[in-house]
Amino acid sequence: MLDDFFGRAILAAVGVAAMAGPLGCFVVWRRMAYFGDTTAHAALLGIGLGIMLGIDLTIGVAAVTVSVALLLLVMERRTGLALDTLLGILAHTSLALGVIVIALTPGLRVDLTSYLFGDVLAVSVTDLAVIFSMALMVLTVLAVIWRKLVAATMDEELAAAEGLHPARYRIVFVLLLALTIAVAMKVVGVLLITALLIIPAAAARRVSVSPEQMALVAICLAICSAIGGLFLSLYLDTPSGPSIVIAAAIIFSLSLLPLGLKQR
Amino acid sequence: MTQLIAAHGVAVTINGRTLLHEIDLSVDTGEIVTIIGPNGGGKTTLVRALLGTQALSAGSVTRMEGLTVGYVPQRLNLNPMMPVRVSRLLTSATPRPRSQMLEALDETGVGHLVDQSVHTLSGGEFRRVLLARALLHDPNLLVLDEPVAGVDHAGELVLYELIQRIRTERGCGVLMVSHDLHVVMAATDKVICLNGHVCCTGQPHEVSKHSEYVRLFGPRAADALAFYEHQHDHEHGIGGDVTHDHAHGHHHGDRPHAG
Image 1 (spheres, helix red, strand yellow):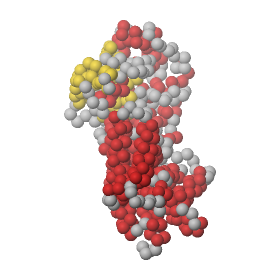
Image 2 (cartoon, each protein chain N blue to C red):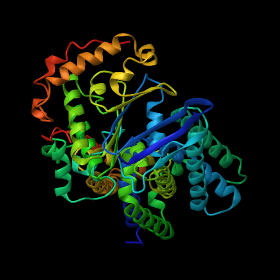
Image 3 (tube, chains in turn yellow, cyan):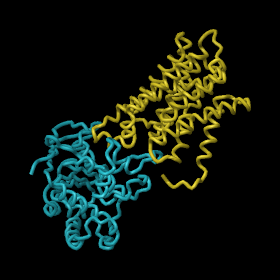
Image 4 (spheres, chains in turn red, blue):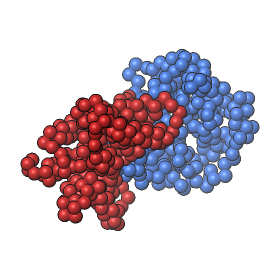
């Protein structure tokens, strides 16, 4: 399976989907969709800097997404600006800066499309190793801090009053999100990562009665979207990243059908 | 009587604006203390300072050795996108056996809601669930921020009676915050009138005649208390029984508004 580009693509997409499911739930619960989007846009700057400095691109991207995410956390506290304004400024500044850095790097011909929309059919065995070690790390950390992270997400004020330190969990979560975005870029690209995070989570909400159940259902739906999207792209000869997102969107539409579910 | 928690000369300044200054107060075991005051008077800030989630710019807060606080927030910022059942909300911080959860929920009269989604609860049910959640910690001090927020007038008195009953049965201290001048005055031992500083403090009937109180809430506020004390005499006996929530509503439909 590792010798076949399609097999590698499936594995990569499944690995990313496994992280995106539960993290996406927190993105939805914490109303941080735009936060994820901004961090993802910044990933392009990481590509540019990585090429310019001649360092490994995944490391370059991870460094930039983590920095931007932490910068957002600080600016959110320090400046009086509304968060969405701040996000809008940072998202597009870093995206523009990324495109300029890539354009200025001499002798470089980069196909921007593969970074914007993903190029999962080109993942190498090394990429796979990075994706799966990251997935293992992210899921382990999530499992360890799960209960407290959920409590801090339910209501920060109440969590703080009960001696939990919600700010700490917020930082850990944002770091996990930034790292996930860095490795997910290969699969769905910077412009579509948020979709893979929030669409399966939103679909999972409809059928879930507990946060844990929603996270597990979101993993399943994200994996279904990944595999379904890749087969869609194989048979219809469509771009892989957008096909995965479309598969997720189809699953979400199905979840909206009235199935006699009572309000949960 | 043991002193549970006390503030000594507490001041809180946020972004150069002094929200609280020279606050002294204390809550003893078995005592119901209510902080009332106008919006922006610093009530919620004071609660945060006492809970330790708001840094003080001056003064200190002393807590009894082994103090356990059961906190009932004014509202939860719970996103409807997160599916949460009552049982899960009760044990968000630490897992507990179902029997304990049911015990606490029964104490506040909502045991039948244990498996219901919190997003489908009414305002009154939600307050009772939050109260049960606080009781699960077996607190010796209950802190309630606007305990009747989101509850209709008929339910208010029943909730205050429930709080009084919990105080009597458990012997814990209760610190409440309310902008409500009337019902709460009849259900409390000590009133602290807060407007950045402690304007006046004492028993409800004393405070209601205090000039500072009258200045803040208007001359009709004092009359309102008498009205409610009178009404209150006739309300005993309905206990905290939820099913009677609305049966006595007409008594309070026409209460006077002050200020």
